[in-house]
Length: 211
Image (cartoon, rainbow, N blue to C red):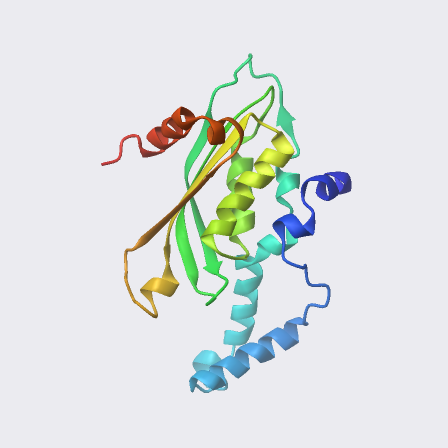
């Protein structure tokens, strides 16, 4: 599997300079205490005494994507598909990420489709790939491209289509404060990129049944 990681997921493609000297858990908790003091609260009061530990535990879960490789999730494929070679679409994959500019939530849905070329991957693996990239500090544009890129690299399908729609709390909670505003991004590879009709079919299937 190391060979898969080296071939399909070089750090420069899917990660920004992986950190090798992470602070200890105690140092992370101390940083949270500093922030509590900086906002004007008392980290020693009853309600906040255990907050640093809780925050560090929550961050370990919310940012677990840094320790996972999406190429590994896509490593096992199936070729007994009775010759099926049409669109495979997994839509409405909910995700929670964090904006790399303000470290506040991005909440949305991903729609991922691909045109297989002799092999398919388990549907849950697509959702896991979305989660891995979501559990890192992100921009929606980069996350869209990363999902499409790793699926194209590992499965080598005839084409990949990815659409993300999300609400950014950095727009809702601060700054311009526009709640309910949705950002839509999409990217296409292979047949989807070269054939507008396939893009239309993908979007139509994603939007099927919606007003």
